[in-house]
Length: 105
Image: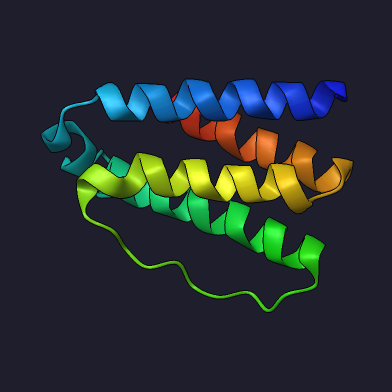
């Protein structure tokens, strides 16, 4: 297992665990910029889905907007797709996305 892969696995677990432990109203509450945390999570999941699609040579498709209680699972699935399909540069990009998201939690 390469270092970036391990870091990405750890970061995905860290972020999804933290999201699953949050109260739903915290995920729905808009921040100072008017954006709810669940929207930030969806945007991060979309970026990960795009990275995985690009790596696999598939067309990018929009992710559905799930109910608040499903955002952590959506992020976990898209992170797993990046781990399964992406090369190291895309994994690094995914890692950066997850670290940035964690810092907003």
